[in-house]
Amino acid sequence: MRIADRTVFGRKIADEATNAANDGREPGEPIRIQYAALPHRLSQTGSLDVMLITSRDTGRWVLPKGWPMRGKTAREAAAREAYEEAGLIGQADAAALGSYHYRKRRRRGTSVLCRVEVFPLDVLAELQRWPEKRQRRRSWFSVEDAAGLVDETELKALILAAQARIGLGGTKPAD
Image (cartoon, rainbow, N blue to C red):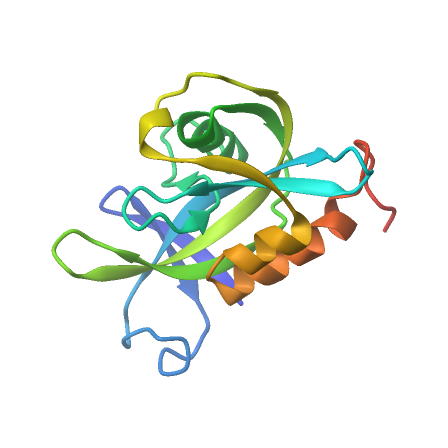
């Protein structure tokens, strides 16, 4: 359950009412905020496809994501990450699909716990050249295959819920 977010030393920090002993955090450890895009398109069979990219360090399948950007909203930052990391141009929804947690490994062997807010991104174009093309691979997957490729349990659930939450053909399901 999120209580509030605050900025400390230029990084957005989440204040979450969770039990640090049960969520892998040390008592008092901050949770950093990141924003991700869930790039999607309608497949030829009428189902939802999502794009995953590989991480630069381990080659794991992940979503395009990054830190908050000065002067950009959360959804704008997510769309920018999709461009930089996957070469995608698209429209990110105003509301996040949900969030997931993961541990970001740092170069010195330390790690920080991050909460990633995920914004659906309706992909309008795929570029042939983009800033991180030589550092990553990108690929389209069915929702089920994509969920099976990511490591984080919360992200698997978000991806599996995407088809119902995002809707197909540019329309969203009624509440």
